[in-house]
Length: 405
Image (tube, rainbow, N blue to C red; front, side):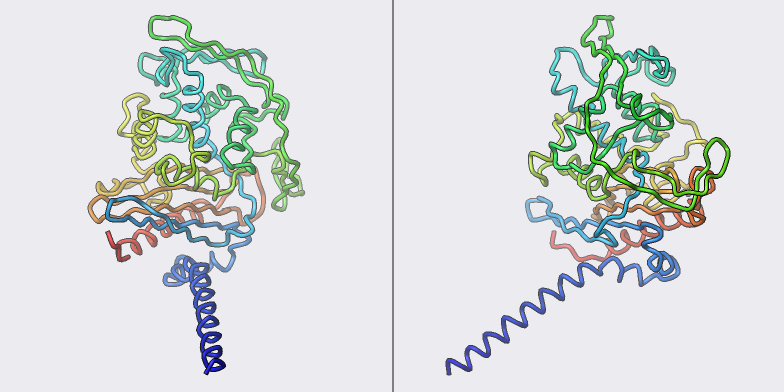
């Protein structure tokens, strides 16, 4: 009898282990199986996932009876993660850190709406005393953050990068558990490594002209982990083709999973440990959430007229590059990036009418010929159609997914 019981117990345990493994396997293949339901959009991309450096993270959000959320993550081609150039997605943590630094300074009268004057200490640095697109022509951190999320403005990022300083950025990201993140250079401006480590002197004033805070030119002592990253077949330099892989070793580098986690930490701060949260106050959260989900037409200062800036200008996941009127019931809180053929979007998508909410992040390399710096990328034929169809695929799945609450 004992022997029979032992046999039954072994079978029961074995069956349970098999079931657990099957469940894990199903979760691992979930996104791949879902994309397989629409082979006309995804079959060729899945087949070339490694060449395209295709990564996807999808997060289901479950609510209990008290409306408290919990999260389930699903990944596609994420382990081990291949390098992708994060482009403008690095602006998101820089915006968060700019507000955190203001809170840490804790100076009476100093806030995101204080006038921010950027000076130049060297010939390669540029100064900003007024901003024609800002209210009252006053450059402020709030104004720069709006520019970052509305149209992904590069100069706005550079000004916040200079306020923070390279060393501060690395220290703070490492403290929050993002030790692999590297944000070490300005955008759109090609400067040597040493010059990117030196950031401008900055002063803040209140509206009466009273000096609130002064920051001298800052020299970074940040030490970055050595990494050798070379991609492609060639690149253009000074108008000439160089038949060698393009070197990304001294470029910015942030994992998609880290960007995904950073966004979650601001939208759902209670869902992550205190260590991973940015030090933000109630007004900071409200401000960020408003402008992360806003469309260019919703802003007076700065003003972004159509058709140059259409409503869905920076909403790749769900709209791609379509110039359409956004659906009024859908809001997208996100940050996009595109450069060197890499196209990335990190997003939280909600539908207030149909009670849909989920997080979705994706990156794809749109550079079939393997030549960098030639401005001949496959965004329109590969990247934007993929982003649009992926967003809609996950949205349609969420519409049908049964939820307890």
